[in-house]
Image 1 (cartoon, helix red, strand yellow):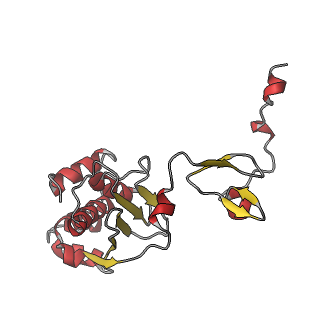
Image 2 (cartoon, one colour):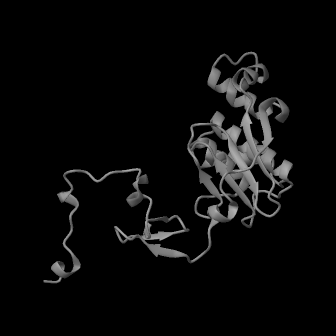
Image 3 (cartoon, one colour):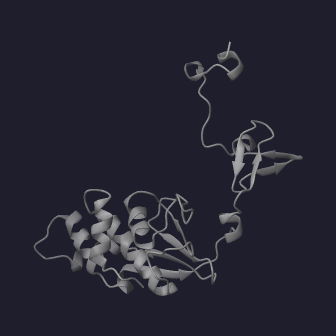
Length: 210
């Protein structure tokens, strides 16, 4: 449910990129369908809807434009598994759905594009805007493996890692052998320190004051 039209949302999404692409259209259409199924007014003004997108980029921005969910508000999360799909969670009712394009959505888009349009990109750009929802998306009820409470966490909760000492927020610490660890120190790092790191070595506060 929304007071804006599809075209208004597409224009708004395009304004963030200086152009409109097919994946933005998919994201906008998917967000609109989720709002209809869950019975939510979009874009939301509160934090009732949580969206987990399965890839980043233009697709995610399209969804964000419609839903009002953002990383900054902690209502949009990215679980990058490289799929153009998303899970929509009504945090009040617990209703949870996953929406993804049908497997032959590109071919389907071609059938809805103008016959004179021979360029695949623009055929999809047009077709995605007019394909009926039932021909464009698969929708299923799902249960996410992590509770909403654990995902959202509690405000103001913070601890320090027992090894590196850095602060951990949102209850993302790991407890192991009596220690509180950040995920990096627990072996779940997404980076490693470069061997030659001296160029970024700054003097300690005490040394700087000498």
